[in-house]
Amino acid sequence: ESEDPYFSQADFIAPAGYKDNLGMFAVSCFGCDELVKKYEAENDDYSKIMSQSLADRFVEAFAEYLHREIRTDLWGYAADENLDE
Image (cartoon, rainbow, N blue to C red):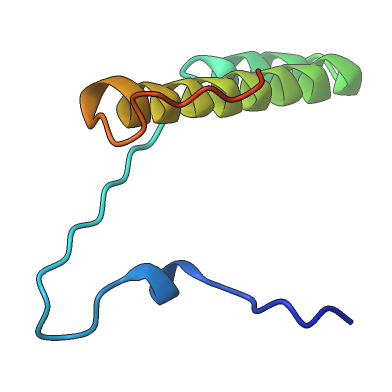
């Protein structure tokens, strides 16, 4: 087993008595539920699973994009960030 420590989000929150901030955002893919219901009604499991998977990928990609924009442009704490994309 690894000797590396395991961290959780709670490890990065200041203890009581210190001012701290926490930023969050949520993304969603509206319209997927209706499409999934349509494919369920048609007993089309393949299209249902593909729709759910594609919606999940869109949401994850958009969350990554937003996170990068916030880091580099809005908050500017990583303005010179140059990660391989």
